[in-house]
Amino acid sequence: MTFKQFYLISLFGITCLAATYLLLLWITHSKKSKLNILYKEVNQGLIFIVFAVYSWSIVSLYKVFDLQEFTLSYLINDRILSSMNNLFFFLSLAYIPIQKKNFFTSFFIKKDKWLLNVFLIFSVVITFFTITDKIGSHINLLARTLIISLDSIFSISCLLAFGYVLYLSFTELGFNKILLTYLKIIIGLLAITQIALPLSKMIPGVLNEYYPVLLACFIVFISQFILLLVCYYSVLYYSYANNLKVDTNTSKTPNINAQEISELLGIEIGYNRSSKQFYLSLSFKDQFNKQQKESNENPKLLQPLMYWVLFSAAKKNNAMLYHQDLAIAKFRMVDYWNKDSNNKLSQELLFFNESGNFEFKINAQDISIHDFDFLKSKSPIKETFKKHFICFVSNEIKNASQLNNKKNADKYTAECFDEFYINL
Image (cartoon, rainbow, N blue to C red):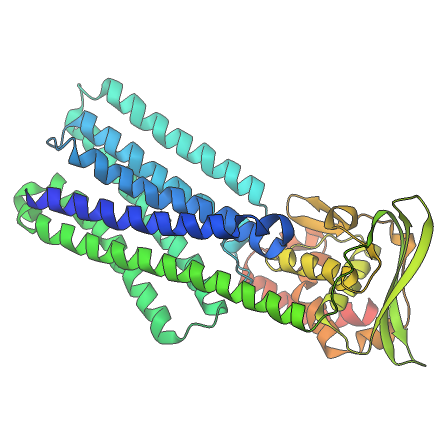
């Protein structure tokens, strides 16, 4: 057995076992997607990760049974398989749960658009590889150089983009600086191997003697990268399970005999000064087309009720909301109502979604916010509006002030939010 065969078999074993574990993790939580919005997007992202890691297994298996020299045909097949790996990692970026918003993460807000753009780009790349195969006999050396360079650029871009988003998510999960630094080092070293390994083949006289060492480094760094993925999704699911357990333990038992709301007619939110209770009232038609009104009261200003206030004010101001945390927020808003109600509400009935921009379906004139000045005086409500302030800014101002840039958006929020909030 040669050194390279040993490397390929080791790579196949590591990636195949890790992908299988992640697949089993996905299977374990896949049914929860239908019951809980917390899991839905994470599961969608994880299945892309599973395909990406399995792609490494397929590449290594292909090379074990086809150990040719660095021929053009062999190289094209190898790089097409490598492109599939990059494709799945790029697709998964939109489904890694992060709350931080900046210029880069703003590309993922409209997930459908992101998926379409990624597929289009990789279709062009694979088409380029195919065309190169047809004309490669005339420009063999140039074709090999172009293919290797293009694949290396995409691989490094993919690793850096995925590593950055993973770093943000690790930060929000509460990992300390030592582990975050370790993550950055592994991503950086793995990216370097994506430059060094192709160069060792393109310039064999200079780097060829280091090729076995570079392969060994690659398998060490990729093993650590995959281990981080396994740890990340295990911790993420554990975190979600714990949050839901806390929510369940601190809430009333849901009424399993609750009826479905068929049509929402009105929303009323406010504060009852006599009973000192925050309340949410809904007017609706039940499944028997009977008109009803029901209220949910609580002495505490809970986060879901703040989002009810936010969405109501946004509807009245003709603004659509977008943010990385809205998937969880929408779930908790509906859950806040359903846990104490005899009539069940669904997200589909409550929210309108336009490519990641959300608003209430109900008409603005059917929404009432009583004692709004009192609600606005509460610091948590003010912070909730501040976090989503950019959603209330007109497109003309966003474009003129370039508010897609995080630094510009933060500066604009600091300067203009208080005046906006006073006049809201």
